[in-house]
Length: 216
Image (cartoon, rainbow, N blue to C red; front, side, top):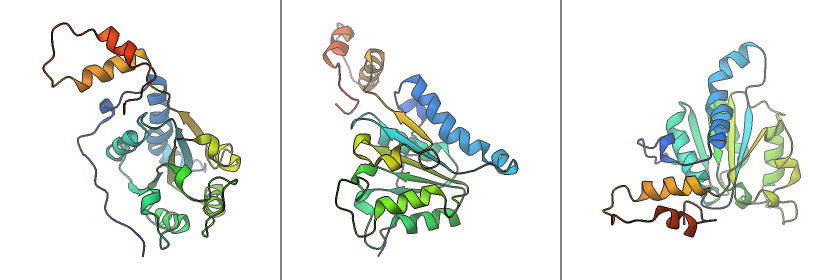
């Protein structure tokens, strides 16, 4: 049967708990929370009230953390999809049928590159995941008031029909590894509750962590 369960989340998490480039933060705010706030006005004006957003970046850059924070930022029914929790009884078609019934709703698909069949070069799964998602996002059956946020570590592995087509994925947001100042903020934040020697050389630590993600 379908592996459906209530989400576990940390109600204390907020946008200040993640360190991202300010332009990335603004783009996420505008295209997710901002779009949700604008939905009533869009609906009155007769505009489309569905949207697809893809967050891409190497593992450890904060995509999953942002999704957890997002749960506290939006007052919508949220369906969180992971490859591990998809089973024979739970397909993308089922998920979006539920999302439409519970709209306004948010569908979060984590690590979409691990969901079977999203790369045309790979052998397709029995449920035809790529074809299903393209059909769903294309709007043959309108996804009125359904926001889709997908994350991926490897956008280059995804089929071009998914990642480069407005109306399916409307906004592509790339999350880079943290820069010098972001690493400094991370290091100071991670050690804020630790007793440190007085002569910590933050510049040296920042230099030593060049190219590392927050996970490192």
